[in-house]
Figure (cartoon, rainbow, N blue to C red):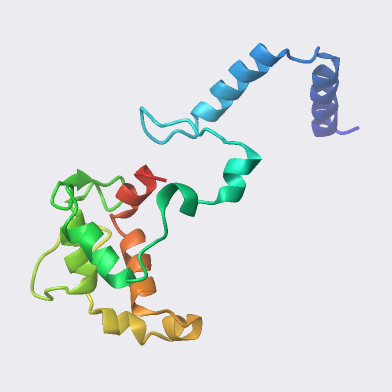
Length: 166
């Protein structure tokens, strides 16, 4: 065996000679291993329900989504309790922004305005929704205006807010 093969073989033998962990040890080891995936302090631990809960679907717990997608998106970004509360991103160089500003940047940008995140190495620029709707990739994907708006919002600073509730 080569040197690397010998090292691998030794590690396999070590693992196979260890006694199985009891459930308390396994749980403790899992908590340590999974801690590296918590992006921020205070991250929440997922809880799982029964198969019956799963089969009920989200509608049973959250209700049906609004069929008026564009109006619902506008209300969520401009008229929620936190629509004008600033937050700081971990992307875009620590940009300070809010949901209402991001909605304006994506949906109805003032092309003469300087928005958060336009300076520095990221240098994002406001562009009208129509610019993206007519892009060959959006056309090929058959994206609707609300889908495109959602994609642009999610790939910008708003990902911080969206991921916080997922």
